[in-house]
Amino acid sequence: MTSQNIIAVDSTHGLNSYDFELSTVLIVDDWGEDFPDACLLLTNRQDSVIFENCFDAIKSKLGLLKPKTFMSDITNVFYKAWFRVMGLVPNQLFCAWHIDRAWQTNLSKITDSEK
Image 1 (cartoon, rainbow, N blue to C red):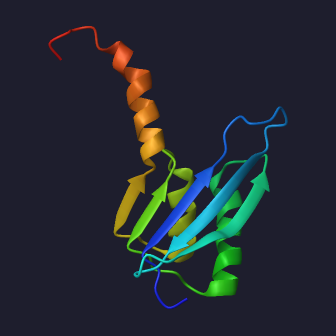
Image 2: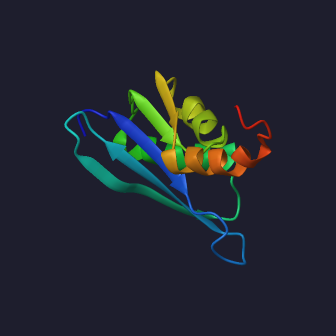
């Protein structure tokens, strides 16, 4: 892979009673071509240590990746692990679905109709 433009990490949430989540890593290059499911991780832990191991495995297969943008759920877990393994990414974005869900959840907290 010659160039990595975007790295996207996403996880399933609450889909089973065993507390296992499936996390996926997607790589998009500068030409808009994607490498879907660059990594699949099934785990009952969602912490930086687990994802550091995951990103170390990616690094051992693909080398050091230097994307321009890192996109993930609204959590610091994924980026913190990425930063420790691969280094700084200039742009960090949160997934639009999670942003919309956060807005919808919190809009009811606004009681002043003028706001």
